Image (cartoon, rainbow, N blue to C red):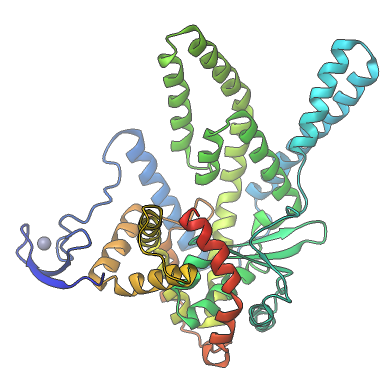
Length: 444
Ligand SMILES: [Zn+2]
């Protein structure tokens, strides 16, 4: 399991470097075989260069005026666009009622479909009533107490709900008319972090409550959710991929158009041709939705990324600059963690050995594996991340710039020191979460 390092000579520059046979061999001196080539030519290359430049500009802007302006032209335009989205929803609802009242059979049918759509796609204020990842204060009092303490130190709203998901992400959302704060922790990420970094993570997410992210406002959030629902309906399957990559990125638009074209090329039999036609129609219908969604993401992108930088500052305040940087650095290991979990899943589904406590074993093996990733591989991930400007998603700035921002700021001590927390007791509280998420990861 634990790899051993051997010393190699670079075939390109002749410098010596470490190599672990579990990972790609590369040269830190001349970056031979580093991988992660950005697009070299054509539209993709120009777009890539443009995105990089935009990210650097935003980074520089934030360094000059750290607080940012609450009302920018983009934000006002986004508000107007969101209003338009809500008006369309309202128009469909009112129009459908009028059609039903009008009385002819055809009008009633169309009106009923319209009403059905309105109910199906209505903006959702709250959370799902059955959330398998939600934890109550009674189940996990220590986790809530720690989060409350972090929130208290930062002067932000304590979480109304904490959720533990399997993944390598964390999140913060405001729900319902009361704007409840919902904190989501990815257990894979939590497992990969040290105690002080976990406090930084809590500080970062709860800090969103004061970081003025445009996405946490009710009006804009509902508009985004409505557009998401519409694209799910109009682009079944493909919509998932769009959701996954959070739009904004126009690459994905091309991908969708290309797949429509493919569907039509393949349509040899009549049935396929009909499918192709239906897909084409859905594609055309979805065009305004995709356009509005892309515009809204673009308008909110900069403000959202600024808010994410500020959320990182909260991470540093809660857990120290060192821990916040450690947290960000761990984000580069997402792919390594995912690869390990996939491997564990394959082992289990192929009847590999089953430990008595399968959940404990899974998460411990992940921690051990990530611990065993050597510096040379961590550095490779960092450099690829910087080369590609990788970010958690389109709402976040490139991770390497987030690291740079923390390095540029004066170092801060931890507001909540890790040694004041009873970690074994907190760990014990999360046993149910470990089970629930392990079952999902392992596909049992
Ligand atoms: Zn070299």
